[in-house]
Length: 91
Image 1 (cartoon, rainbow, N blue to C red):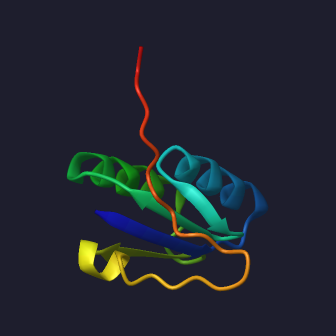
Image 2: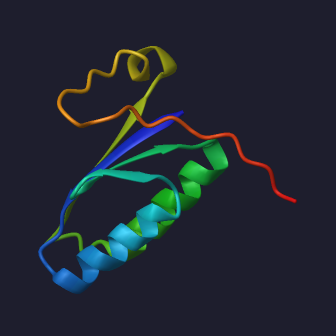
């Protein structure tokens, strides 16, 4: 499943920690927008980590779950590119 995570975090340190957290799960496509292709277990892990970093009364985070049909309809303009998982092997 593909997830789009966007945020508005007021504190510089917390914003950096959240960005570093999200880099563990996906790719940054804009300054405060990440795209991650995750299975259910990884998605839950990502959400748990994000929840620990966010201050409920100060920050805003949106996590959009995109079905495969919706993700396939992604349109990019300019220098943007569609995020696709690269094949890799653990040796």
